[in-house]
Length: 150
Image (tube, rainbow, N blue to C red; front, top):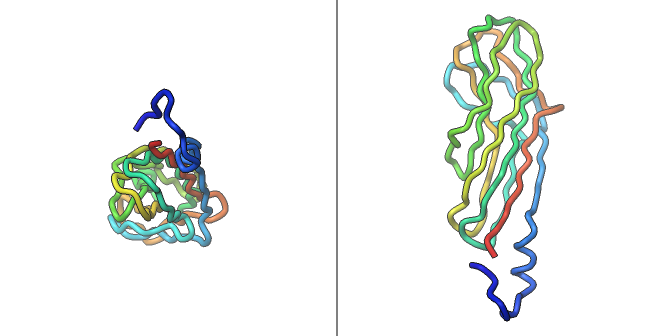
């Protein structure tokens, strides 16, 4: 809803005009072993409350990945999950033996309803690995910016 000429602007409208940002760093290592099993990255979760419908989110997800012994044909995938639904954008990195990588992805979307929302990072592999891979907590994080409609 636009602010009209001559309209009295309320404090809550002004507060919503400023985007809010929140960061969360992964709290522990996340082993990723199975073919298509998507696992949460512990600590890389943000729960927030919007006051208006159709708030826009912008997310940067960073995944610090350390593979075990593996072939370069296996990929690690990083996902964003919003309110229980996996977003379509994916961070992707080919794994080679013991080479650590920092992979990121950005996402943008709309939170249709006002209220509480949970955004979290998740990861999986393209193929099963006995040695697996680990999403490391040191540099794995989610950063969320929310812009609400006035």
